[in-house]
Image (cartoon, rainbow, N blue to C red; front, side, top):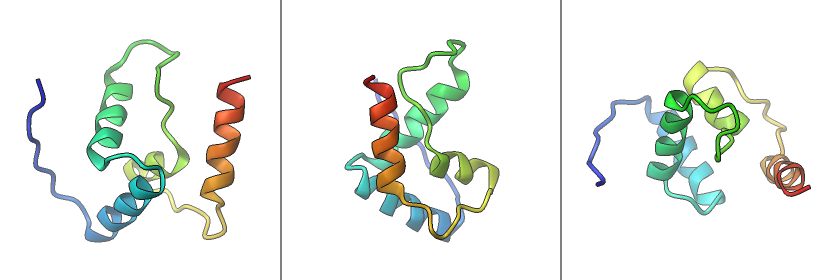
Length: 82
């Protein structure tokens, strides 16, 4: 059963996260759900790997301005499906 959750976040982070979700053709809700699942999942080999961008949202780590998201995602898929 899905339940609505309201979060209070920094506006800049929300905008970047929406853009990221759009680029990945995923809903922001799905990304947040997967992140929370990974935090509470005891398995080391979780089904969904959290990207550098999403990790940076929680740790407030700055992402390099020249980071190529498409290349990172492509590399991730190549590694995943080897």
